[in-house]
Length: 364
Ligand SMILES: Cc1cc2nc3c(=O)[nH]c(=O)nc-3n(C[C@H](O)[C@H](O)[C@H](O)COP(=O)(O)O)c2cc1C
Image (cartoon, rainbow, N blue to C red; front, top):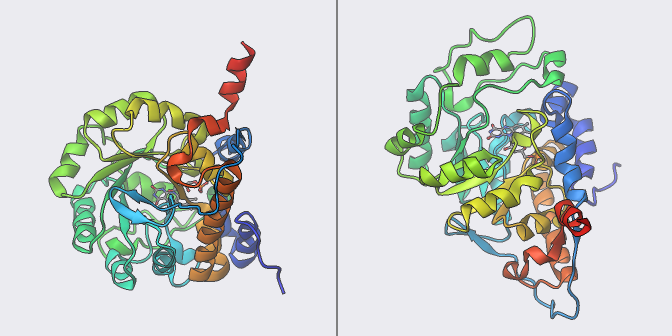
């Protein structure tokens, strides 16, 4: 019998064994040289702690609110596409796991269950991620369905005017399944019999002309708060503030879009400073340990989002695997808080971590 995983990283191997190579590679891979993919994780390893001692840590409280919605810990489920490639219950299993952990799930636009199926499966607080299609009527239709189903916010992913070059998918001739929310509405002629259909279908569907003024269009089709996901610079954070978004997700799409983008944890502080605590800043990319989550919070994030580990948990053990992944991260965060002298999230400050930048400045 396979050994029980003791940390989130060990789910990767379980997923590799559970999945067809084509699907594992689809989940696992990044763009081109996969430089950013490695950096997302390694940049966390270069941040060290400045723990405090002799603090009463007999009670640790990790609970918080995101846009006013309570959650047991600052750990959310990132939007990732096509959960049915990992498990037959797909996004429904993920949503149930989120509900069981009192966590917030962001459901992907590229899902293999409908918004209605996920909404009726459990009572979790859910946000809905979107892309803007050339067929804006289709984007508007799904946004409005999500709103009717009780999703609480729209997360607009802004780093994908085109799809990044993921070479494993090209080699494997990866064929994406139907996007369930658009069943019967999207043409299937983009599916190629020669190779992967991912790039072709994205190019046919995504609207590469989308720009800042389109936030206004989004506002015209929904009354939900709009967050943008994929910001990596102070300049764009400032623009996001100007157009009045409700929050920002610092993200490089799990290193699947522009290779040699910075590791998200290295630019989080720049974005947080530009935003100045006016709206929540979330971050994702390479979060694999409770210590990573603590580091992100110390650098100003309100919460982190988890991408691949959730997919690996789902592939290995369905809903139960996703729950295990989320619980492991929660437990690790709790221990990190105790060992750093921080009984509540408010106690976690910038002075609890030392970044590469801090070390360089010390030497000057
Ligand atoms: C297989 C896969 C599919 C993804 N699909 C989407 C998506 O549909 N929409 C989106 O905004 N981001 C998508 N992402 C990016 C994630 O939301 C998130 O930014 C990233 O996975 C975080 O990095 P991590 O996987 O290292 O945790 C996807 C990521 C992966 C790995």
